[in-house]
Image (cartoon, rainbow, N blue to C red):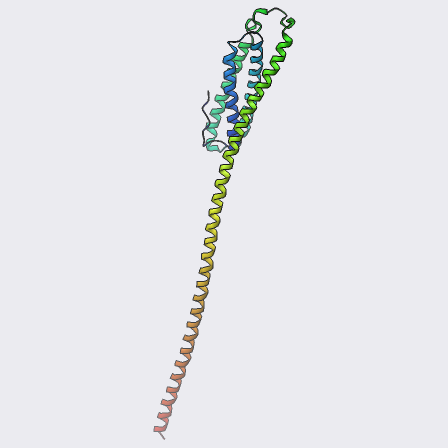
Length: 228
C-alpha cells in the first residue's frame, strides 16, 4: 500500500483527493477481507459495495492524475511514484474482486443452481442489498464530510495566519511612512538652514567687498593728496 502523502508535496486539492482515496482504499480493503468469510446473499451485497468502492477509487485516481499538473515540478517525481503505487493497488484489488466474484458456490451458498434467479428469497436479498448500499454510501459521505471539514479548518488556519501577517506588514508600512514624513521635515529644516547660511555668506561677501573698495579709495585719495 502506498505511503501517506508527504506534507511538502502537492497542492491542497491534490491532498484532498488523496485523502479521499485513502479513505475509500481502507474501506475497500476491509470489504475484500470480509467477502472471503461470507456466502450467499451477504456475499452478493458485499461484492456489490466493494465494486462501487473500487470504481470510486479509480475515479479519485483520475482526479489526482489531472491535478498533478498543478504540482511543483520539484515534487512531481514523488507524486508520480505514489500514483503508480495507487494504480498497482487498485489493479490488485480488481483482480482479487474478480476472483471472489467467480466463486459461484460461495456466492450462492447451499441454494446454488443453474438458475439462481429462481430463488424465492431474491426479493428480500434485493431489499437488504439496497439497505446495505445506502448505509455504505452514508458511511463514505460521512468520511468525506470529515475530510472536508478538516481541510476547511486547515484553510481557515492558513487564512488567519495570512491576515495576521498582513496586519503586521501594514503596521510596518505605517511606521515606515511616519519615519519618512519625519525625515522629510528634517530635510526641509536643513534646506532652510542652508539657505539662511548662504544668504548670510552673500551678505558678508558684499560687506567685505564694500570695505575693500572704501579702503582702496582712501589709499588713492591719500596718494593723490601727497602729489599736489
